[in-house]
Amino acid sequence: MARVYNFSAGPSMLPESVLNRAAAELLDYDASGQSVMEMSHRSKVYEEIIFSAQKLFREVMAIPANYKVLFMQGGASLQFAGIPLNLMNGSNKADYVVSGQFSTKAFKEAQKYGDAKCVATSKEQNFSVIPALDPTSFTPDADYLHICHNNTIYGTKFAELPETGSVPLVADISSSFLSEPMDISKFGVLYGGAQKNVAPAGLTVVIVREDLLGNARKDTPDVMNWKSVADNDSMLNTPPCWSIYVCKLVLEWIQTLGGLDAMKEHNAHKCKLLYDYLDKSEMFSNPVDPKYRSMMNVTFVASNDDLNATFVKEAAAASFVNLKGHRSVGGMRASIYNAMPVEGVEALVQFMAEFERKYS
Image (tube, rainbow, N blue to C red; front, side, top):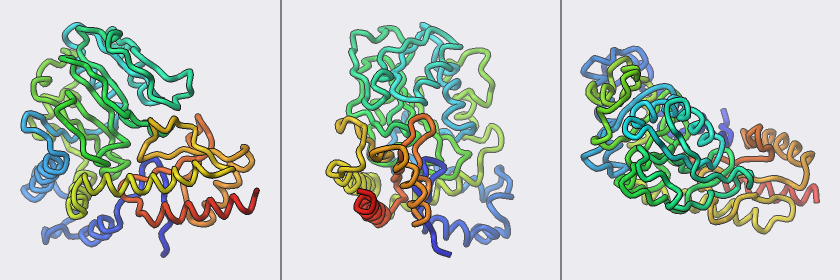
């Protein structure tokens, strides 16, 4: 069966080599006579999987020794509450940069737990830019400052990180996870759902500096208390075993390609192909300020809504699927995460050029 080019924003495509290996090991993992989906998470064979995945995360992302890697559930959305529950424990204040739908949701969730302040927003620009940041407007004694590093829906990304001084910087990196090297030491916490670049849906990864553990609010459930999760090696309760196993395979795949330096080069090449075409097209355009364009999520629109609908329909018939933009913004969106091959973007650009000739 021929596979399509899947431009879904998440859950998204996985590397074919990873899928093939998972399929080969589906019934019998490492001669254990059982599937990862049915083995005990307390067994020695599964402990090797989860500890290897944690070790690989450290190696691939160059995570310093004073950070913990936690495997959790509930998606990034559960961490919208988990962050204030674990961190809003000093001044009971937090700053939020509202640059899209998910940072809006995170901000609203935090307001339930304390004095959450929006220090900058690009809502009036329809989130087509990352808002300008004025450090003098930041709360000096905030427990943390929160950003969404890459905006899946609007196709924007932080070109520079905010300077927060001694205030921990917290970043939702769900749609930029493992796409390029990151200086982990600049962050207090990094977190994200795995279903875009890391693994199948069900796994959430939290990377947290150790000094930020142990001060959770008294009403924090144990399964959301980062210290409890860390003290139990991410097995306080049954973890998302299959997703962690596939995560391990994805991390091994990234290593074989040359690590995150090679991955960034791969992703930069893909997005340049698409943005270069959009910039010269007379039918399609990208609404994002070039300074803030995402490498992972490329949004674009045609000349009118009828052409948008026709494009999505004809693209799907030509095996370019999940190109319809988010319902809140319309148009189109090509999510070109790590597993999308260069050939997929080249084929999409060729299809777009043919569509433009046909309907011009």
